[in-house]
Image 1 (cartoon, each protein chain N blue to C red):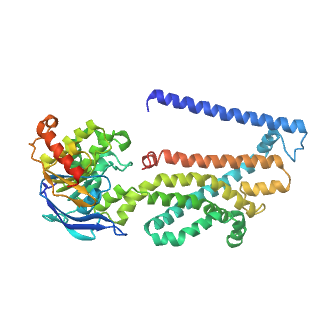
Image 2: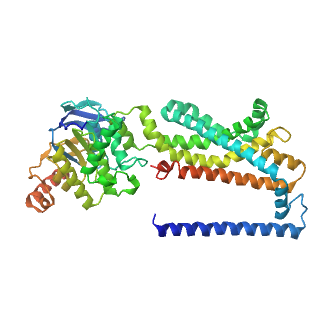
Image 3: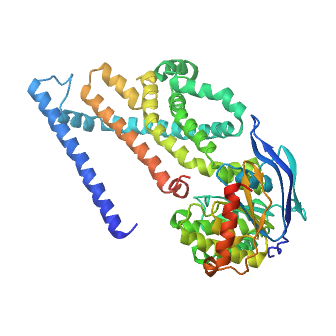
Amino acid sequence: MTVTAANASSIACRSLTLRFPGGVHAVDDVNLTIPAGQIVSLIGPSGCGKTTLLRLMSGLQHPSSGSVDLQPTANTRRGEIAFVFQQPSLLPWRSTLENVLLPLELIHWGDAAARKKAAREILDTVQLADAGDRMPHQLSGGMKMRVSIARALVTNPSVLLLDEPFASLDDMLRNQLGQLILGLWQQRQFTAVMVTHNIAESIMLSHQIAVMRDGRVSTPIKNSLTRPRDDSLRRSPEFGEFYGTVSDALRNGQ
Amino acid sequence: MTSSQRRNATREIASSLGLVIAVAVCGILIWELVVWAFGLPKALLPTPRQVLSAAIQERAAIARGTMMTGIAATVGLLAAIAVGAIISVAFSQSRKIRLAFFPYVVFLQTVPIVAIAPLLIIWSGYQFRTVVIVTVIVCLFPIINNMTAGLMSVSTDLSDLFQLYGAGKAKRLLRLQLPTAIPYLMLGARISSGLAVIGAIVAEFFVGNGSSYDGLGTLMTGWQARIKTDALIAALLASTLLGLLLFAAVGLVSATVLRRWTRHPS
């Protein structure tokens, strides 16, 4: 038994609104469509509602009004939507392999042998094949994040939501892990939404960049820089020009 | 840990143990000196040597008393861990249960055990069972307080992760909350291990000498009545050692059997 190939889902947020008690709009009438198989970055200042929007998309939180629709409907199979948190958030009492096995165990996927095989495969993909028996405290920060990414992808989700996953890492690791995400996306073609503060990162990874401010999302900016994107792209004039465009949009909140 | 780090750690433990022993030796010398200088009578304060000879003379009684008190304290501590864990799980699953019953758990902590022991003797009799019940009452609060905190301290990310994969309450409890709570439980058990011996001995004071039960506390009441101060001090030292032993045993279980969970609290 192997994990079935991912069918990327498109995500459509329609008039999505979340009001906190007291009337504050965390997410305010968001209309945003993320085409299947694309990576979209959400950038914006702290507290503008990015994480809340991501949680609404994942179904972890329910909107006050509006809806999130996944096409094809993904909610029929658990493990279809995966989440990578800001911190690796591994279970400290479980080994690397056991941490990656957790989602498969929780959704009762396959038998023990098949689960182990799938977990080993994804650990191999994130270049942690030899670290399966290590405990989280024996891993570096970058390795922990790779385990966290492996754990998210082990169910072969059609939607991957990333909440500032590299915020606590240094620049070099950030770039490496960004490249890892790109590589994984090329293999699996999932739909991804990534919250980030880092403009360069959002340009390197995404097809579209949406700026968020005070709970509202502006029309996404299309990123037409060529793929595959590697570090040399950062030195190109096109990258610089696009960086300026995104930066302006972020400053003006549009 | 590298071998040089291990060597350093061993050296550090050895030197701190040396200091502890040095303080004990100084204390015994000062004690001996005070008795000699003030000419204190044996009934008031015997010398360390007199205590040692009383301990040797009464060794059978002290050994049996230590064994009885040790068993009562251990059984009480284990029962408190079991009962406390069950109550904590109930607290962690329902806010209503927590709000309704937690004040009574605090009440359990504030009620003076010396006042409740005679009542328990009336209800449960002059026997082993009563000593265990008193021990459980004394040990329960640190266990419930710590374990409930542990069960409730699961990180939001992990909680979200379990929700995302559709884990129900039972799965969350077994695979997330309980493992998270183990270090907290063991911390509570460590505090309670010292209290267990105190609880058992207080109960034994009330069970009294002359009954079929003879723990360290019952021996102490008997020796106090006969002003056998040297044997009384020997029993006191035995009870202190017993407390240390129980404390060390809890630490050992934490560091070995439960190492996977206790080494790195989340």
